[in-house]
Length: 343
Picture 1 (cartoon, rainbow, N blue to C red):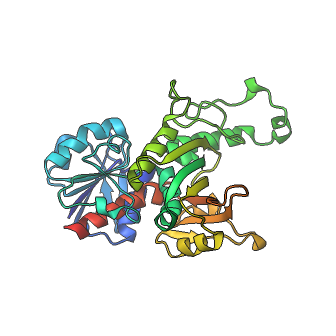
Picture 2 (cartoon, rainbow, N blue to C red):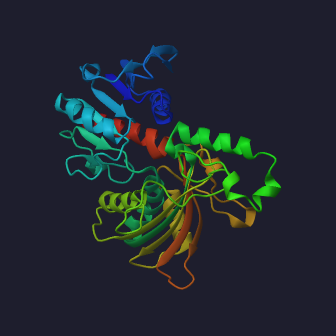
Picture 3 (spheres, rainbow, N blue to C red):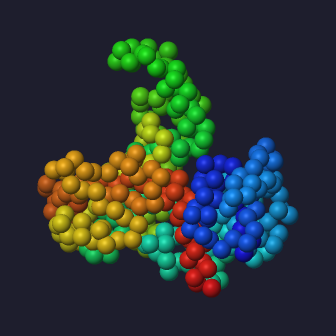
């Protein structure tokens, strides 16, 4: 099988190449593609160094599978062209997620969306993947009615430039801990990526604001995608998405309301049996999820499971997942594996 990785030099692209190797995906030839600026660099795959080629229409000729992490504007150009030539495309951008002809898939949750006649698949928003990996098994048991999420999203979700900006700001502010207690706003570093200082701070804005609702488009995407993935068009969903000074690992504080009461012990049993989930919920021994523990792993960690004190049909929980792996690259490769099984 001839497999292309589009955006091969980015954080997600490199992770996709790594996961293809880890999972022994049947690749006869790997075609790493990126922008003209990144073309000529080299990536490692199965003990070989491969030269990255520029993404041009002819570069995808004869490609059976394209795993893409190149941004929506670029995806809107090449994905339809490649799919029309018979290439199966798995795209990490938001360009096609709400298109009815494209599959929006988390393989552990809605594998029925993988069909032999489908050419375009989308990896959902990285934060909704972490959220639904924790919530979907409970929904199957008790019927989800409403979902409220507060996210704590790592800077790597904004790409390598986000990681660099955090590192640069931490270095600039090193040794100024006392001054940070009473900071001079004019002296704080202002980065181009996050708008506000991200070091030693949180930024309650991811993506642009929708002027009509006050929600950010990240928050709107989470609500729309949750409804589609779970096939619950009337689901009540609201999100608040926040960027935090963590390199890798998105976290979510979830409030989920069900059709029936679901005891925390039952929820733990259900989640312990769910693929791709690891329950880390032992408060007596200070065991609960954190993004550092989730980083580099393939499982979503779920803990702090407890019943709402005033609404017995509502559970609260905290979940963490690696946004570059399960939140992006791993989910893409899992979709590709499901496509092969469906043939």
